[in-house]
Figure 1 (cartoon, rainbow, N blue to C red):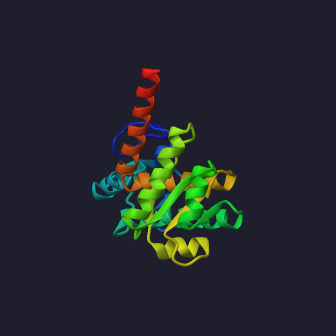
Figure 2 (spheres, rainbow, N blue to C red):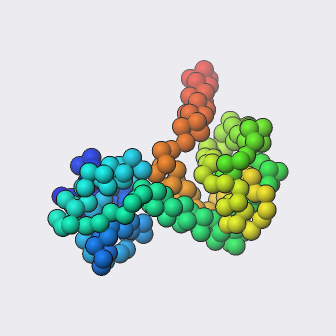
Figure 3 (cartoon, rainbow, N blue to C red):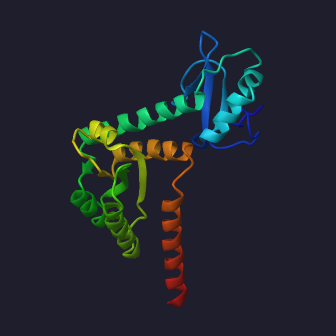
Length: 216
């Protein structure tokens, strides 16, 4: 088996599209999110559906050619680890001055081209999200970047990571620290099935821009 082949789909993929798993000393399967744990590893497509399938169908034992233990709620455990990694990196970005929160600061960062991505708390009101989405659309129409937005955490978790209270909207700024946050947010979002509404909005914007170019 190719060392970057998903044990569920049997298809090869880039490492960013896969999660590596290894077997610990107690014969328990553990995710190796940083891909640096010792021992033989196997790979699973980086989404909850395929991780759950690998656990349910006993594919880890087959891949490791040994009897291994998969803990209960395995897919949920992987989700928690991905979320913890993303929030930890968000906290480091805040300390590096690469994150802001509050609707006004977020909108300014988006319109000014400083934002790399936007985070909305799960409790965010539709009106607040819509205003920032309008700013994201305006940025694209003016030739700026398409800034992704994610709704992955409750307010309490965002506030803890960013050292604030009532953190409903936040922006991660373009920087090395911001890029590290983006990588982890993308991984968590993909694991949870993606953000179809946000992707649809960006696709629509791209289509409008293409139509405008054709008209010109």
